[in-house]
Amino acid sequence: MLTYNSTYPIGLDISELSLKLVQLNKSGEKIRVQALGKIDLPDGCFQNGEINNRQAVLGALKKLIANPKFGKITSDEVIACLPETRTFVKLIEVERADNLEEAVKLELEKHVPMAMDEIFFDWQVMAELPDRFFILAGAAPKAIVNQYTDFLKEARLSVVALEIEPISLCRSLLNEEHPKFKGKYEKNYGIIDIGAKRTNMTIYSKNTILFTISIPISGEEITKNIAEALEIEESQAEKAKIICGLDEKKAQGVIKNILSGEIEDLNKKIGEAIDFYENHFPGRGPLDKIILCGGGANIKNLDKIINKAVSIGTTMGDDLINLGEAKEKFSKILEETHSLNLDLTGKKEKKKPITITQDSSLSFATAIGLALRGVFIDEL
Ligand SMILES: Nc1ncnc2c1ncn2[C@@H]1O[C@H](COP(=O)(O)OP(=O)(O)OP(=O)(O)O)[C@@H](O)[C@H]1O
Ligand SMILES: [Mg+2]
Image (cartoon, rainbow, N blue to C red; front, side, top):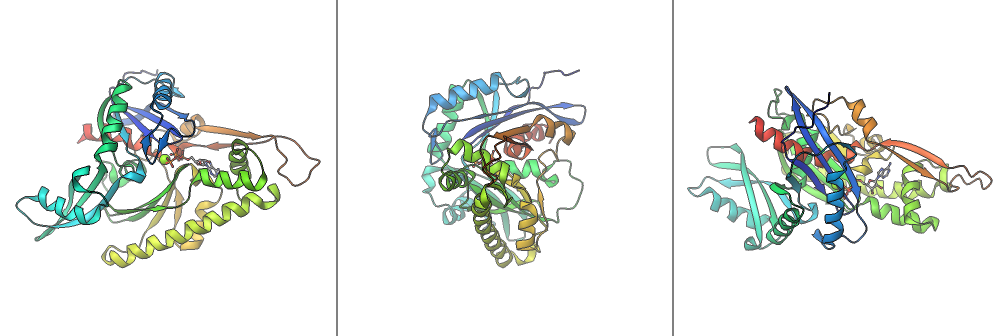
């Protein structure tokens, strides 16, 4: 019997082109998904991370809460993420000081490309040496934090926390982030989130994020390029991208060529991030694994292509890893079907709609991580 009695806060991923939410519940020791859903947003709702069209986003959010794809929302508390491009997170070294807060602030000033009186920052000690601390510090512009808080209040939600996205991603994708993790904190990961608006790589080592880098690739841009090359509508190009992928027999190989070019750039950037990591953190050992998430990770064989290019084991992320849910059940719930009635075969006589079904779980990694924050805090 399903009971909708969760008091855990909603995890809300506010992205520029969609909103995604997850509410978790516990049944015994098991963390279960009580509700989950996604709604697309029209173009132009955001600009540079700031909410441009409040009414449109508000309307979509209310609709999503009232009618999620799965389950039922039973909380008016929310943990949301801040726009990734406007936030900062990094492991910094701070010498022992009487006033550690002040010392962190002074060090942070050297790293954050914003004036200190214009940002909110938060920090936590990750490791302690006799003379210094390793501190994970996060920062976001006050203007953005205030705007998001006001917006969520307007939606009649009570804000438990606003989080920096890579932190949420690590929580949903890594066993190490579970408060009851029993293993050794010895692995190093590169987590790559390929989204509609941007791509980001997070380097995580042992038990902490070290740094993140942004990669200039986005699902939206790939779709635009396909629309232009094939002279079709963007909505059709979006489907064509998902359906044809890297299959060179489809659409005369045009989509494959566009995607291959983007993947080549992606591999170059991943290589640079790995070099930076190896040069700056030689004591931490090589990266053990690259983990892919975000909708763009669904490009068929992308894991194998990256693996071959950078010689590091690459896998699709599993954002259910810290939950007690059966993967198959959620793959089914999160199945998306894309159908296209265009001739992309190159054989003009054939015109049957092409349909594919794919699992969209990897788009929920952020929302799951945000929702997990509420549950994990409760467990500590
Ligand atoms: N099979 C596929 N091949 C290529 N791209 C895909 C595939 N499936 C989904 N995508 C792309 O993934 C993107 C959506 O991913 P996701 O839901 O992670 O983005 P988002 O979180 O809304 O965006 P962002 O994180 O950039 O704000 C879209 O651009 C979509 O075209
Ligand atoms: Mg995203």
